[in-house]
Image (cartoon, rainbow, N blue to C red; front, side):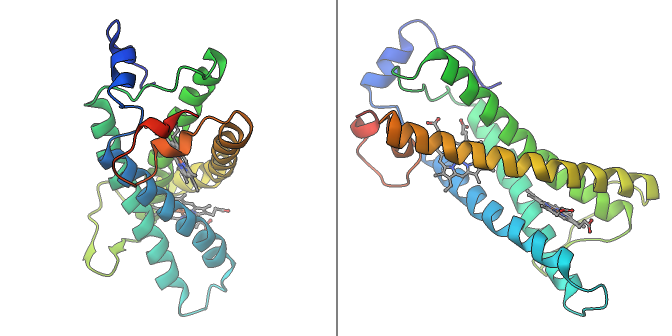
Length: 202
Ligand code: HEM
Ligand code: HEM
């Protein structure tokens, strides 16, 4: 996934032109998405622990859903941006086995970033609960009310929650491993600071 080979010599020229970093839009989208994920997950744990009769419960659910749908929107823009630009080559010091793992891991993270909001949407709209996006407007229903759909969405959402935790932990460990043990500064490819691109490999 997302591994369209670059034309001959273009990797090298991309490196020498200092294009080791992701483009600014992709970096901004990465951090906005990460921020949303680090909020939406604890929010899910909190809201699902609330008593059904708690009057604030509905508001917390609506907030969870609003942030979740924002993740979907950010990801669709990101995938479009990602596919319409040449891929950012990984530093050449990274062995091919690790490159493959990185491509699989990143691909699965993208799958999660789409499947979690979509399954949540099916769960809610199947049960007839519309989302009032940050209390600004109602997100339209594109699926019919259906007990079966709500159940299916709920099952997928709960199951993929575990895959989400595992992939995020794996992602963070991979970044730390490269950063601290392999001494390849992958973080510099994703940070928001402008300018310098040469420090990407040390
Ligand atoms: C990236 C986006 C999202 C993530 C990572 C996420 C994550 C989670 C997690 C971890 C849970 C708790 C699951 C459990 O332990 O049972 C949960 C519950 C829930 N989520 Fe999401 N969610 C996302 C988006 C959405 C969206 C967009 C909606 C609806 C439009 C939604 C609706 C729900 C509902 C209704 C529950 C409660 C399910 C229950 O009570 O069993 N989620 N979500
Ligand atoms: C503090 C938390 C995080 C850090 C430090 C971090 C760091 C990074 C870094 C350094 C890269 C670039 C890897 C490379 O060199 O190719 C990256 C890529 C990526 N990250 Fe994160 N990340 C974080 C959180 C997240 C979260 C929460 C998600 C989504 C659940 C996520 C999804 C992705 C994806 C999909 C890519 C691949 C980008 C692409 O190739 O298009 N990251 N991350």
